Length: 346
Image (cartoon, rainbow, N blue to C red):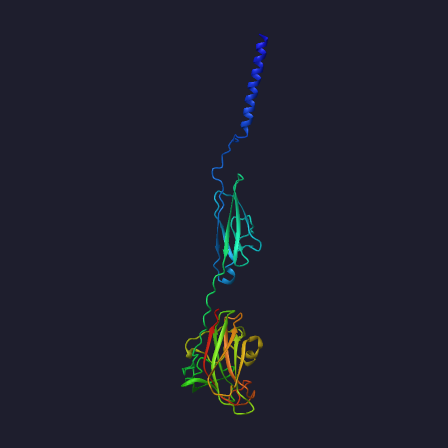
């Protein structure tokens, strides 16, 4: 009887031990109290939108990266070297970091760049996505040609005085007006720069900053007289930054609307200031009276407005047959038949 009881105790101990081992093995697989399985794990995603700004040369490099991750509470971005994290919201006191939900990036230029987003939830689950962002500089729109009024020097009305081929080209603060004349197969179709007079042409027009332009002018010189003061024709493109202080240019379309004095450039000292000149070219007498096309180029620099100033020079600074502006044409008459200014678009 004692032997059977001993066997029973052994069997009982083995049974209890087996149950405890079984329970112990299952503990790791049992959820904690109140714990639920992650039925909605995070899914990382984002979209990159290129900025549409007013400065195409720079704005094309800026992208807005908008987070579209699902079931996520925390975020971490990875960006390539050379890419800059931007803060474009001046009213937001929060400084953006690579742990922000959404970010704004400035890329160094054209190219393909990989950006990675890792999103996670509070259960420690993560999701990662990498996208290639192709940065392409948009094509620059063509620079329009400037608008000149009466560029063929037709005999037209002006704000006061008789009709003249110089209409729309007068600034009496810096020279005498040219006169109507005939030439190059027409009548009253050219402007004459009289010998020994300070005759000029002047007109302001709008330009695109930092753009290149070509100026073409068709002129004719009377045959040389052999005198002491051979005539020359001087052409200047004057920067709008040199206009009289406080002056705002107005681009008229009708010759009778153009002022004739007290606007734009108001003195020869302003005209001759090197800082105000974008182009200075001088034509000398070619020793024949043919109408010749001369071509020059200039860059507008920082200006959105410039003035074209043309005058006869070569004569004595004072005296002559006109006003006293510190210059005069020389011994021969000069005629201008037309002026054309075109933008250079490559």
